[in-house]
Length: 262
Image (cartoon, rainbow, N blue to C red):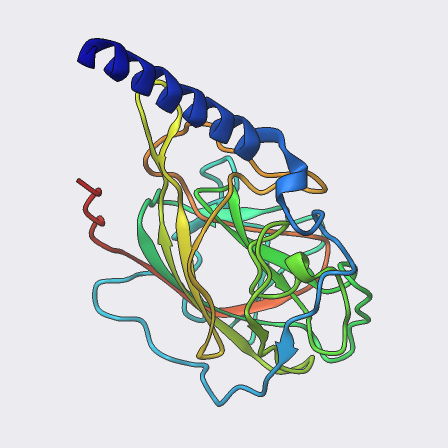
């Protein structure tokens, strides 16, 4: 009798797990909001304090501090970047393409400051857009979000197409914004399934907007994200979306791994 009950229990548990996995992979009805749903409530606007221009810690890899770009490359190559250095600022150059860290990273802490020029016309996702992609594929969105309505899962501080920020502390055009991000890489089982999802914690101008938020998968446009197994360490990518955003005080530091749950 005990053997029969155990077998039934195992079969039932397996069926539940299969059903749950199927729901996560493809059942869009399980989500309250569509991807990029304009009816999704906008994050509440808050006014941040003065948070920019912090120096890099001693154990950080400095990506850009006003002049050298030696720790950055054109994405997918080992060639120097084509973005411009102007007045101690790094500017997305027309046709410059995406850039990335020369080194690869897994779990890390990133600081980056960015600004949309004061005279730049912004309309939703157009005119003032960039992004930072951890492991070249998990995006924290950069876009002008003050007085520029767009879909909530595409506002500044969002996990693009997945999770809006809790609030919107974006500054006006012509003023600097700062991100401090703790990224935890995903872990995969031997068969390629996800053992533990990636997470991010994001402070946006000193305001918490993502709190150990689970990433649903690689960033995608107009579709649900999903995971594909990849290397444990990959470059961090910064996006050229065709808009001349400006960057400064960019640094990254590796952090120790979190223990896996027992």
